[in-house]
Structures are given as C-alpha cells and as structure tokens.
Image (tube, rainbow, N blue to C red; front, side):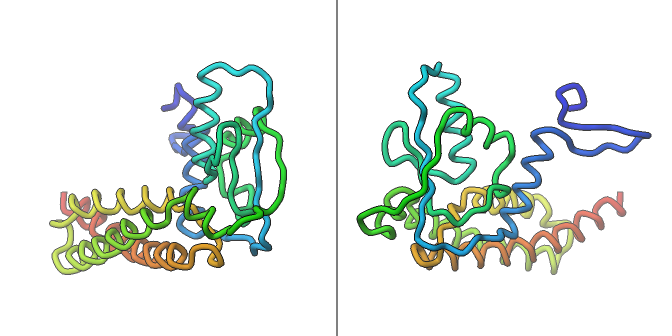
Amino acid sequence: MVESGELRTSDGVYELAGRVRSRRRTQDWSLDPQLAPWNGEWRVAVVTPAARDASERNALREEMRRLRYASPREGMWTRPDNLPRDSGPAESWRVVDAQCVWWSGRPDGDPAGLARELFAPVVWVPRAEMLTSRLARVTDAMTRSGDSSLAEGFVVGAAGLAHLRSDPLLPRELAADAAQAGEALRRAYRNYERVFSTALRTWFQQR
C-alpha cells in the first residue's frame, strides 16, 4: 500500500493516504451526512461531445454512481441538488468534471416519480430495514456474549456500511420512507460500531 500511495509512513507511524484516505472521508460522511436544504432544483451533468474511449466512459459511470447520480438517458446524469460537493471523493469530481458540463434545472413532470424511477428507493428501503434488524440482533449478541459473535458482527457490519454508502440520500420531500430508513440504519450502525469496537478490543487483550 505504501508503494501504491495508499499508505504513508513517518517515524514508524502509518496513516491512510491517496484514494483510500479520500474514500474513508466520504465513508465517514455517509455515516453522518450533512444535507443541504432542497429548493426543488436538480443538478444535471451532460457529457461533452468530445471523443472518449471505453475506459473513460467506464470511469465516468463508476464515479457518477459514487457521487450518487443516476442516468435517465445516455450522456446525461442527474440528481436532486441537496448534496454538498464534499460528499464525494475529490478524484470522482475530477473524472466527471473532465467529461461533463453542468446545469441546474427542474423536471416538468413529477419529481418524486422521477426520483423513484432513477434511484429505486422501493428496492433500497427493504434491504435497509432488514440490515437495521440484523445489526440490532448482532449488537445485542455481542453485548451479551462479547467476542464470540465477532465474526458474524464483522459480516453484518460490512453489509450495513456498504448499503449506507449506496444510500441515494434523496430529499425527504421526494422519498420520506428512504430518509427514515437511512436514519434508522445509521443509528443501528453507530450503536453496532461502538459495541463491536469494545468486543474486538477485548478479543485482542485476551490473546
């Protein structure tokens, strides 16, 4: 990781660097998102007409998804304008800014319907609710039995964190059920993280 620029060392102390450090910041942001008030505007990215090779097109798709944008048609990406720029990694913005021009506007049709079509909260919400329940159960198990539930806790926690990273973070005005499910999952994950850290520390002390 040092050779690839993802880990930095100084006087025997290691710290994350590069893309890994940037992703950690956005992961932390996903656990405590600070959303901007939504005034009905959407951000729209339109791909510039310059020729692009397959690797550039693939990179754009990957980074747009990381920035929580969806594509209603080829060459166009959009989402409600309620996320600050620092909600996404700087390297993601560099990729998309190099290939797109930006606009702000409002859909003529039903914005809630458009959000449902593009971001499928009907799919995201049930899994969030399931993971919230699983996190609560495994947190209770670790509280009672300590490090004997660490393996299960690690798997469930990783699944919960991955799902939070995929939260489209839609305005409550467009998807109240998704906003509520996301808040519940974050509360469950923070409680899980505290108990998991204690159980893991106990496990190391006993070795």
